[in-house]
Length: 86
Image (cartoon, rainbow, N blue to C red):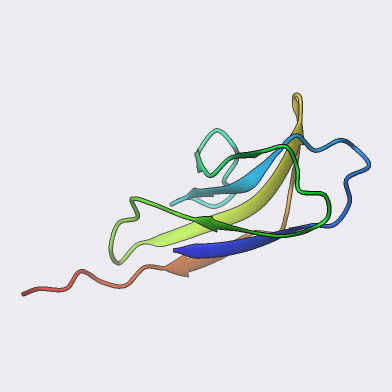
């Protein structure tokens, strides 16, 4: 799955950013995640989520972190396409 996020403000020194995702609501960086280093400044970025199961609802949030501080964006969800039988 392809998802995008936007860094709106870099005044707190974002060092890592990406998307975290889970099959349960409220995903955090402790769950599956994409991880980019050295913030791009403000702007949009894209993550490609890998290893998703067919016919499953996933919850996703963008995040930005600096040290132990993590800020999360709004949560969205989607359902992957069902498995295709040959």
